[in-house]
Length: 562
Image (tube, rainbow, N blue to C red; front, side, top):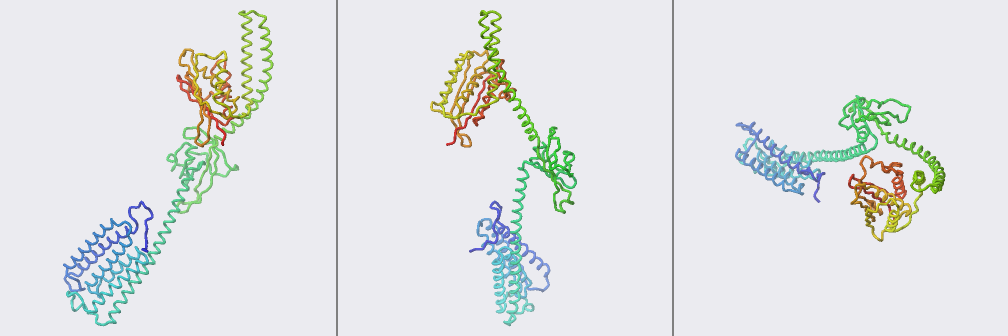
């Protein structure tokens, strides 16, 4: 199997590492050959020194090497996988070119013998142990061939006779071969050791870099996603980092505060010992609002060469404004619960006297003739007593809600029953047209008595949403169906929409508040009771409204899981 000494780590990389190494090897071939031949020609001049071929042969040789290198570089662009094989071919050619140069410049007495070390070192660096030893073998065999040719007297005829002494002694020839050959393998072994150590170091560095990158990514993700605000301060008191939670708590962005003194923005954050586990201070947000925060601090053990000293600090903070509001809400809820319980008792005690007043007044009404002032006063007393009785009943229902007794019932039947009941009331406007769109087989899982109360309140409110100057287009639409929510929970969907005057935006958020009403004779508890009933069923209610176009209430009630 072909050895793969160097594989690309990134599939999107412009070129694998060995391809880049081949390009360097081709460039090095041109540079080394050009420098050596240029120096040799310049130093030799006209004097008779080392054997050197005619300049015409040299020009042919250099031109051939250049052309071959250019062709190799072009072919390398089309190589996709066989980079190792291509590298073997190029380094073998380098060894053979070196052999031709040595043979043409004196054989065993050539000054270019050391050039053999370049392909050997290149092979070891690019192809590691196998490549280094193989190229060393090629260089040894090629040099042995030169020695053999020299021993047999086969030299170029341009060698000066006085310079070259043919090897006529076999022992001398073997000596001339053994020393360079041994040097070739020694250089190959040393280069292989260095290249493998380099490969091991690069692999370890790559793993370390990868682990460091993952650690940095993990740190950044934790630093940015944690809900606790984190501020790091260097030895000079300048803010060095500012996470996303700190931005949300303070309103400042990291670009606003990083590089500035912490005292300029948060003077109350003190790095001093405190008797409290987590001191609480007030800080001023960017918008000028003061909020309470709990914070703690600790020293950072930074490297001395990067910190200068050990006075780096990290502050952690948490916004306590929501907790404070929740605490206030809990206290308020406890207070309101106590008041509500007391008020419920008072309301219950009021109901009996009011009932007695209403009964006595009705008995007195028979003493007066119809149309007299006294009769009108009696009617006012009876009407107001009935209104007070209704308000007290609603209040008691709101203050002491009854848990729903769920069962299956026909949604269509309940809506028709509710409409029939409303149309029998004296306050119902017969001009209103009610349209229903409910499947005949739609069943709902809820407390029918409480859902009927919800429908009565919502439809009754819709009937009062029309202005007196709107004699036409008084319509109420009631729709219902089943649907599957995003969490795959099936729900019953009920919509009650009117074409009335709509709800102004400034009071839209208050309509579910207890005792909030816009009607003169309203109790302000109808919608509060509606929301209470829907939430006790585990459902939700939403309202959308636009002035002049109408209001739409949407109720979603969960169905039991099968």
